[in-house]
Image 1 (tube, rainbow, N blue to C red):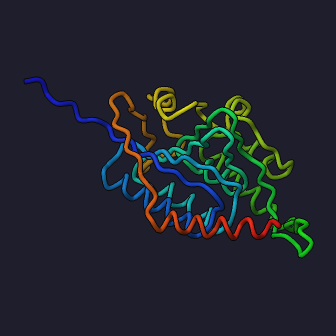
Image 2 (image 1 turned 90 degrees about the vertical axis):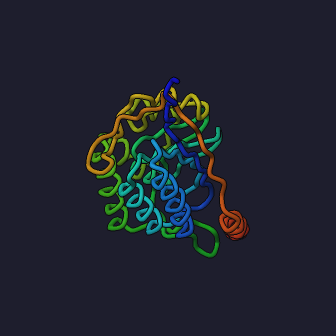
Image 3 (image 1 turned 30 degrees about the vertical axis):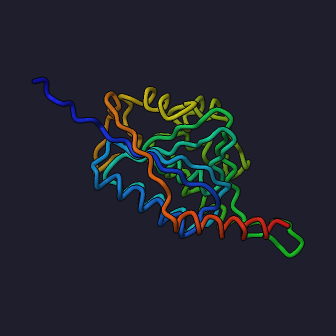
Length: 230
């Protein structure tokens, strides 16, 4: 009898909308499930306009403490990893983008005034985030100069530009193409203290559905989000 090849398991989960403390719970739950199954990696399809800085930093920390590689995939076409989403991507083991997506635009703001105009962050806060985004880029061997311009120039990049400038690793139309292109690549940050070579040759892809609570929360935050903008 021929031996049965153990398949490498890759999880795929989807996170979209504003980054809140609840988004941290989603990241934590998805990564934990993948860790418990000792998956080869987890791919998080991310689409976010940004959100809370404290939640974003907790998410980055959770990704960096993960026992398995976490791939941030800016998907589907039309999606963006803007503001807080960019930091989350830069804190991850590999970044992929679908065509027609964007990354960047990280100028920190304090919020909106009564008449809807943006309240700029003071230089002290802006400088803090410049240092933070540069350190994330440097730790992962990504382009720190461009990372800084995400803030100072509110720069936003297409997948092709991001790849050319060494901000991301892969441009892929879908999960299959992402697995093909990243197979054999090394993680940009260590997992458990060492860089891991991704092995996607014999893979079983498992999609994680959001829990009922996830669906409920994103519906509530969406309502809230639209309400702010009118």
